[in-house]
Length: 166
Image (tube, rainbow, N blue to C red; front, top):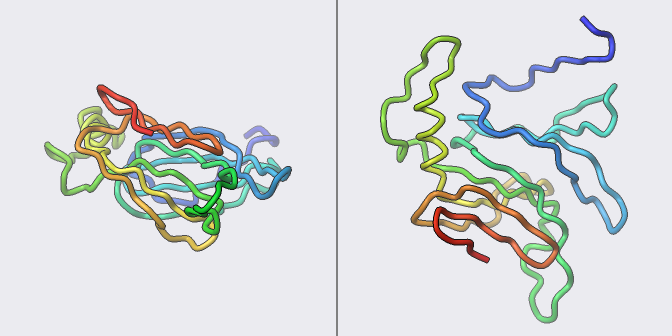
């Protein structure tokens, strides 16, 4: 094995549905690079700032997660603090396993394309997970599938099949 590559097994995974690198905002000019992993049975956030010392920040076994993104600290607005005290926040696009149509079968090598498609098409909630309190602090529920989320310090945009909600 290559000496520069570390393999970590921190989570018993059924199926990986999402993986991306993002930045965890710790302060006005303080960031940490993280790896966001969404699974058919939860999600993980790994601190990858130091490749020789990758460590787990969050590991949650939960509903299937098809999309993850760190939310930047919101700009201060007059009269409304929102969830600023709960930051850093992770936006988690998830679904309820009981609402996934079709059978959840394990086939060759544990991969089942229909299962992944069913999970993604059943993702109708955007949950706001606080890395400070390790709890969900808010949720947005939609009647149609959530395909993606993008956020800035001012706006959270949720991409649905036929529209974008702000």
